[in-house]
Image 1 (tube, helix red, strand yellow):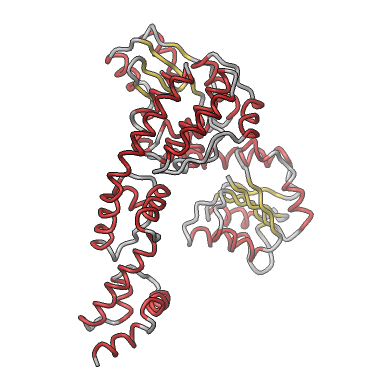
Image 2: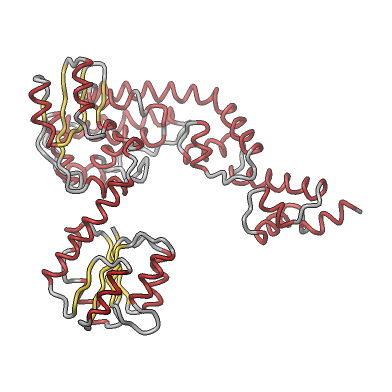
Length: 451
């Protein structure tokens, strides 16, 4: 989370910045300013979760900032500071939605109470808005336990909603359908944290449900308790519970320093096969081999949607007990994906181009286009460039301007309307692009074609 501290007194800003250990409240970034006009711009440009501001400042007051937050529908929570104890200030602040009102000089204990109230408010709001059915549970777990910085999704909303909740890993050998139904009835809506593989049901469950599950499913085994915010603890418990290995922070540092995981390029994975095998052979301990293969799984999971729902859970919770076997299975899947890609890439490009032509007036973001062909946006962008020799954005621009040229000749629509019809919200930008492609402006093009 991000915190912004605003006061026209430099000393007060510095005092507040170091008053608390903000990380204990889940605040990773603290920004400060003594310029209230700059503060307004920061609210517009950056994602600010919490604002602590003096209520009376020259030019733009704290009240003005709060009113701006309401008008722009910004979700920032506000705590006011003031050297004035008049009731009318506090009344106005609370009426406008401030969560607390503190008098200067601010006491550490008062600030801690105010922050606890703010964090509780943010968590309630986040939990209410979270769409749990859309949570990619395995992707979330991999983002926590892996060192690889790549990520399948933005999990910030879920991080906030899951903060301070206690969980355990579990597994059930030789599970039955009844066991799975019992689990899903006691998972508090977190069904994406339950994975079935050919030989076991495994996953993550809230600690509050472990007693009930233990009585209803005798074979179930639970790990130690953890919170997702404690990343190193989660890693340690994960590897100890599933692989009986004691993984330390230094083990991840070792892998990071060696930089032995090659860069994977979709469509060219077979080229990295020898590098993967060579690097794997350098590792002498089972623990480090597990870590290496897990990083590889995370990378593949993020860039290859086709493996997400099938192979990945089996690799992690069944095969990774023998890292060599798991790696061979992964390499076999990579080979199959690489071969199938060569046959299907042409169809993917044709599908994307047809969709763009039929929806030229829409946003056409990489994320939306990726969903059409079930590919990660980054993978789609690289694949399209590899197959056609041009960027996907260039093709979209060409088709939009081609459609615009036809409308300029075949209709009496104003240039402003045509720019909107082909997906450009800013007419000036449309005119610039049109001139870049055709050498003349849309007005000149229309007159020239009519003549």
